[in-house]
Image (cartoon, rainbow, N blue to C red; front, side, top):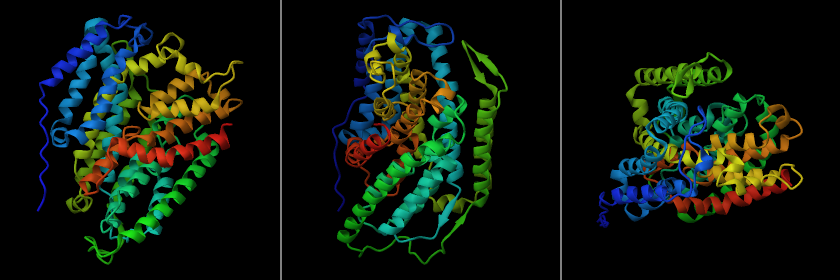
Length: 486
């Protein structure tokens, strides 16, 4: 008989008190919030670290509420996200004024959040129309093959595209295994993050570097060896771990998807053409300048609007041309992308002060942190560039984090690909590799977790996942540090 777990209800009435607390915290901040120069958003130099508390709040909510109040979180995570967003919007309205606040929110919405979620949703929709049908038995050898192929594919179609195409067949291959959460965790490590190291298409930070003037093939020539070291270490670790688990768990469970039916193959090939069109649209937007449309103090690039319109059109086309049976075979559901949209909406808003403080450099509250990347003689400390970029990318959006340290290192693409190539490698590897450290380090992480849970996999909690990353990723990154940055 199924046990019913009764959880102590949490009243939504506590959240106005939370809002009031952070509003009061803003009032007590040592410096008033002010608008920066036109076109530069909120002035980070005027902010104390109290303004980062709502961002910490949404992170702790994601980490703790599923453990402490799972039913409440499942039904109300959107409301919780909204309330944390309001916890930063209300003080901004009070101290920066309506005009500056709306300008900053529009900047975040139009230049950051909407392009992000449109790309994620398009990849999710199109990849959901590609079905790897049939089944393979999830033995350690088969699982390693899945992870290896997915890791290489991630640099071609992006970490999100590769994750969405391969996570369902991997789950199906392991649906007769008693323990498969570790396989999904390593999938997130490799396919959803580290695999996107070799092209600007692989991960958003590298695409931003491409837009800033970094050569398209620089990641392939410079990041190949660090990536292969990380991949080799993790694949060997996974194979040993999965072999031990496979030997212990027994194999008497019936397979819900027997290997012999249907035959192994790929259906929904028209969506592969749509995926190619999506990649072309992203490359187009980063390669041409069509001017922009003025919105407040900033411009929305016309090429970006064209790209986003194409992606929406490709998503609609995918829904129209894909037979329902294919999406049913993938157990396609909108819930993972809805969850990402709501949670990352709050993250994008509450992260505004943190990014502003980092952008203010020596004038901001995090200046001592940024000084760690420069030696006394003025030369860059590549070890610190790697770990600081990675640490912030584990919790903040890795794309703006990459830009902050790219600019801290001088921002000259010629110098960063020449005499400072080790510094650019440290920044790039930190941003791409260490997005795997937490569920929120990269958008595919949360989507893969959500899909796995909907397939019945008992995924580790927020902190439980960090335990896995501490055990396997941190030693790997320490090895990367010793080999490439010391």
